Length: 155
Image 1 (cartoon, rainbow, N blue to C red):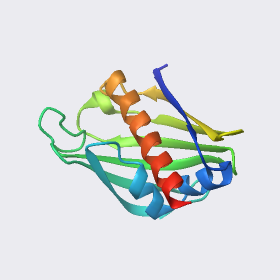
Image 2 (cartoon, rainbow, N blue to C red):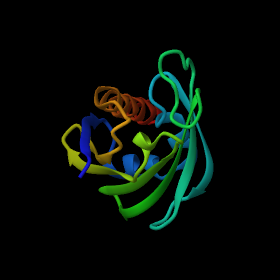
Image 3 (tube, one colour):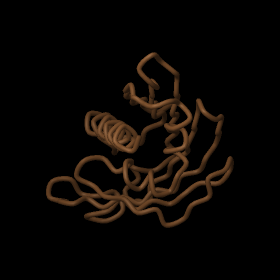
């Protein structure tokens, strides 16, 4: 049993719009990379059993080396479950030589309609021990803030 990290944020958009942003390639590239990173999707198959490959590049790798190389994190993601517009379950595997980043991390995105829009809760289970918990939770929160900005300015 691995570690569990999580973050929650209410986004001023309906669940269907949030769900769509989780399954749209260009949207994902725009909002998923946390502060200090940019992302590029190399493969895209948004269906149950499908997935994507994303290359995340640290804009400044000083003091924050990547998992795959000094400046990058490469992650293979499989869509384990898709239940529109309330649930996206992803299984993520990082490409890394360091065994502390090995294993499959499950990212569960739960979307619940609220009076203010959608409460989005991201729960990461079986987080590899090489990923710092505080940095990971800050990264998830940063991605959620980016998602909120992406959707709240798009509408």
